[in-house]
Image (cartoon, rainbow over all chains, first blue to last red; front, side):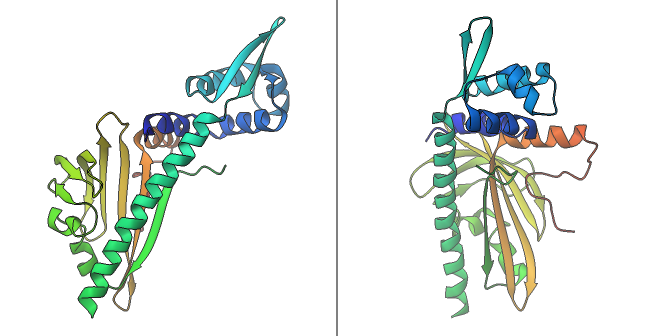
Length: 108
Length: 133
């Protein structure tokens, strides 16, 4: 289980504007920073900063296209983050079932 | 994908009054009956030790906060993994029933969220789960 990657993903997505950038890329794909900024109430500079954070988390890739750079989502780290949530949740389900059983035993 | 502060969150209602439920959180012996195979850390703020899961995974653990009768927060990490913060909070429901809420969140997220709240001027932030008043 690689929760290092999951942590980076959650950190990248903990910002609401960054989540809007992800949403724009998920819906439209292959966008420039200017195109994303046109859709959101933030400056192009802010979008560029958010895109760079998403790249650091492995969530987005940048591809030069003429004089521009186009950004795309890379879904794999997101899937790892979801796997972390699933595994961690299952471990807690087991622990909490044990705790509930221990009180049932005491009561009976 | 909806993302909340509470990335992994579970809540259960225990057939126990608050004092009895707290006894399962307040000490290593109490936690060892359900949390893990072996709990080798004192449940006191700042205490460090290890917690060994039933599947054999050993985590280094630091107790971050203890609110008697209410809450235990700890930070743990298995070797080579990023630390996560675990928050256990009790809420009495009456009739010898107590709700336990568990939240586990990567520590990096807790830091990011609390930084945002500090910037926003919120001073009430106390961790991944807010303690019920």
